[in-house]
Amino acid sequence: MYRLKRVNRKEARLFGVCGGLAKYVDRDMDPVIMRIIWVSLSLFQPLFILLYFILGLVLKQEELKEEKDI
Image (cartoon, rainbow, N blue to C red; front, side):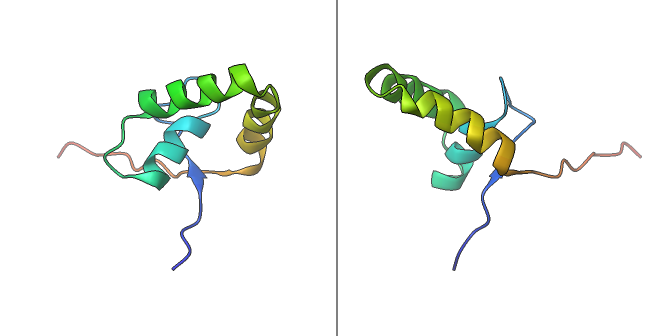
C-alpha cells in the first residue's frame, strides 16, 4: 500500500526532509544517517541541493501530536 510521504518537523534542521525520508525508509532509522547520505549525494550531484528545497516546499508537514500531562 502507498504511504503518503510527510516531512518531520520535530527533528528538522532545515525543512525536515531528511527526517521524513528516514522515517519513510525505516521507522527506526536515525535522521542523521539520511543527512549524511544526502550530503554525500549532493557533493557528487549538486542537483540534490535543489531537490532538497523542492521537497521541503512540496511535501506535507507531519502533524505533531502534543502530549498533555494529566
